[in-house]
Amino acid sequence: MSSIGSMKSHWNKSHTPYCGASDASIRFTSVAVSPFPIKYPGSESVQIDVTVVKDIPVEDFTFVITANKLTPYTMAIPCIKDFGSCKYDYCEYAKKETKDLYTIFAPVKCPLTANKYSFDLKDRSLPDVGDVFKKVLEGEFEANGTYINSKTGQVYGCLYGKFEVKL
Image 1 (cartoon, helix red, strand yellow):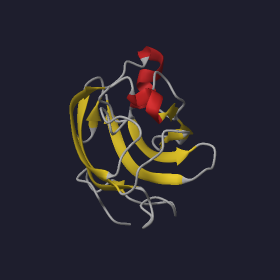
Image 2 (cartoon, one colour; image 1 turned 135 degrees about the vertical axis):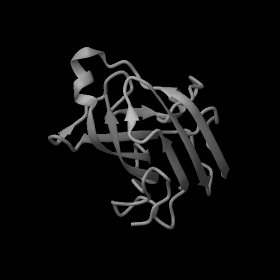
Image 3 (spheres, one colour; image 1 turned 90 degrees about the horizontal axis):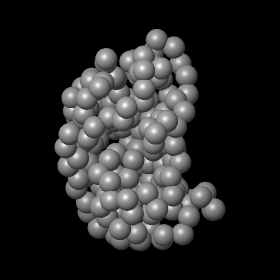
Image 4 (spheres, helix red, strand yellow; image 1 turned 180 degrees about the horizontal axis):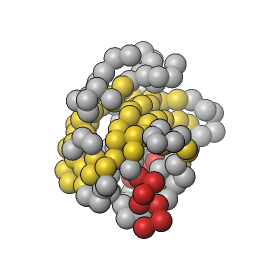
């Protein structure tokens, strides 16, 4: 398991066979998230360096996040206000020109062209998930973000990480 980030070595290229594969089109070289643990409510800063080794077509370019809570109990996190286990049409989402972790490449336009990219997303506000779900946010989590072709299943690249949220 090779660390690519400074988030207490919690962001890793691979826990699954296809993440960080030598033939991946999207390769993350570094990821840093602060503060650690993440404070809620609040904001976080994310720095990302990534290399796109070949152009990614617009058609069926999808980003899928799978998030799970690990402590004090294990549970899958549903998609709530674009936060949690969500699926996005990457190019449609990127058109919003947001600067959040889910697009990663914002404000890069589709098609995503081969190049080296660096992003410094400062003070990214965490979404308000309401009082009911607020307590669920405290604890340790793991998340996997995968860039895929939703029709063929081809994986362009992915990133796996573990993080902690404190209220």
